[in-house]
Image (cartoon, rainbow, N blue to C red; front, side):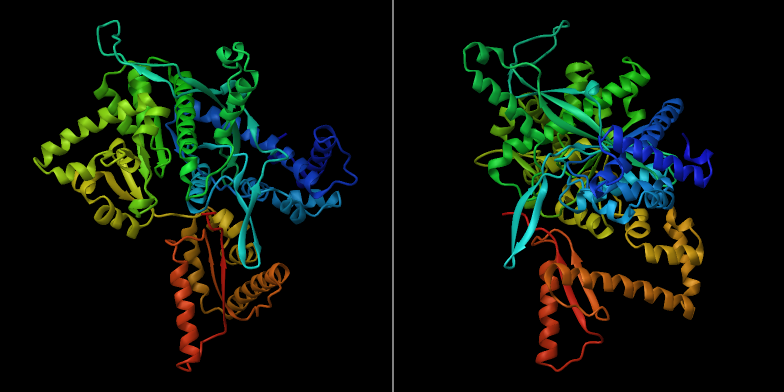
Amino acid sequence: MSMKTINRQEQRSALVERIRHNARYVLGTGDDALTNREAFEAMALTLREYLIDGMLDTEARYSAQGAKRLYYVSMEFLMGRALGNSLYNLGLLEICRDALSDMGIDLDEVRQAEPDAALGNGGLGRLAACFLDSLASLDLAGYGYGLLYEFGLFRQEIHNGYQTEKPDHWNALGSPWLIERPEEASIVPIYGRIENGLLDAAGGYNPMWLDWQVLVGVPFDLPVPGYGGHTINFLRLYSARSSQDFDMQIFNEGDYLRAVEQKISSETVSKILYPADMLKSGKELRLLQEYFLVACTLRDIFRRYKKEFGASAIAALSTKVAIQLNDTHPALTVAELMRILVDEEYLEWDDAWELTQAMLGYTNHTLLPEALEKWPVPLFEKVLPRHLQIIFEINRRFLAQVEARWPGDTEKLTRLSIIEEGETKQVRMANLAIIGSHSVNGVAKLHTDLLTTNLVPDFFALWPQKFNNKTNGVSPRRWLLKANPGLAGLISETIGERWIADLDELRSLERYADDSSFRMAFLEVKLGNKRRLAETIWTTNRVRVDPLALLDIQVKRIHEYKRQLLNLLHIVYLYLAIVEEGEQLSAPRVCIFAGKAAPG
């Protein structure tokens, strides 16, 4: 039933009916005494019906248009709680509040019962989520591709001033938002060896990847509604499963337990989201994880493309497909795309390379050379032998270009090479991503300037046209409309609601800068928010904070390069200025830090 075709009272009654239906027949409980968790699940299942209708309508529209599709590939997505966001974007917040009220249920309490999908470490994952929200709100065919981690970034508790980590089994009870698609599972080969002495039917070189093991990637779709509900895209998350069969050789040798262990171990690939600072012991699993994401994504892209445009239309792939790599984690896309085009689609190398570069873009997130991903060549060869061959060939051809541009400059060759020489050779994933993409961007103007002048100036000198800036943005729906309803309500009351979909409209507030009634209302909203924060601090930490003080807040992952140290030094400076110089602050100040530090 379309919510737009019935009046408000009918909408309200229809929602109550659907919530009760889902509580009874899906959850198996009556609605007389629903817990907040049960009410959340029943409400989410009800909304899911509208989201699925919207997804199917959206897909039909894209297919009719022959739309070019963007695939945003990221190891992290911090989508946040979906119930409130979906209600805002579908325009159903107040009607659902009323419907739950009819059932004696408080919507705000129900929203608190939803677990946060712990699929990211921090800013990189939140940027990905904001892009998906914007793509849907702009009616663009954009999809996220990631992993369905069973355990997200650890739960943090503070004991005696120290962080302790506990498992974050965020999806232990299952998520009502996730739509499983087992019929679209992807088969992913790993390990094995390369047989080099083989020729194809035309007598050409035809290396064979043999004796590989198999992972199976099962996709789950998380609907992503745009503001207004016209477009509903999705985030596709892959869960690793073992293949249906045991390794029969091991099984027939009588080692049943080892056969079962191998089956179980393959499913650990999507088990856990690594902290940003991963331990060396997890390196092989992390490499498997990154390849698993890339392989599943590309298989799905090719499946979707061939279904829509035909198996013979591969030469036009780049006119209908764009792939954005969010940091170096999915940089294996360069090698995997070349492998598919050359080994499976039988394209000539140069044609495959032209398609690869035309489809791929790379977003750089770090300026620290030591934080850029590198993989030991022996490990790479063990896990992905065919891909290492392809990377060596990409590098050979690329270095020939560099030599032609700067003859005899061995230092440039060394810096630009995908392979870092040393006691153990390393594959530089940032170099691979830059070489394999047609577009490379930083996430702020200063970041991009430093990227081109400090981190990879040689690449900028070679291909200045590749580099551009995309300043990080945030979703106004989540970070103002939803996060600060008091301020959002005042803004809408003052200038209307067009700002929700167009932040430039906020400039209309400038004419109220000297309006005393507006300024008083603004300060009341701000003070109300500060009072709630002060109460939260008292409840959680038993520290009294004056809501009238200036609150200086920094919330982000705790790390040496994220500027917490500069903030601490500033606090020390202010303290010394007061106690040694006798200076007076313009207002009492409370400094607040929040975040998780990687376990290391």
